Amino acid sequence: MSIRASDDDRERIVAALEQHTGAGRLTLDEFAERAQVAHAARTLGELAAVVHDLPAPAQAGPPQAELSQPPAPRRELLMLLAVAALTLLILGLFMALSR
Image (cartoon, rainbow, N blue to C red; front, side):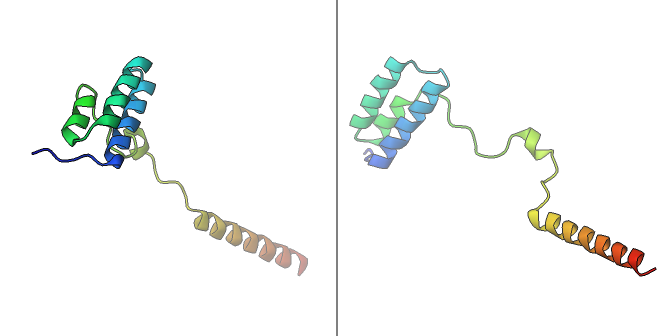
């Protein structure tokens, strides 16, 4: 017994085919043929056959180079530092003028 494919399943496969075409794994003719088969597919098995020879999508997440970098400072921290610097500047001016 095969599981029926939904419209979302078919659109997801066509979107994957578009990505593979953009990456150079499929020609435009191959994309057109496979997209036509995907739109006509009735079961998930038929959809799987359309992409059986293509690599699975990469896992979502940052690349390794991004993992080794420290996190960017938050806007709130920058605002706090700016307020502290301005306070010290005003205090310094007040002390200089009161002499």
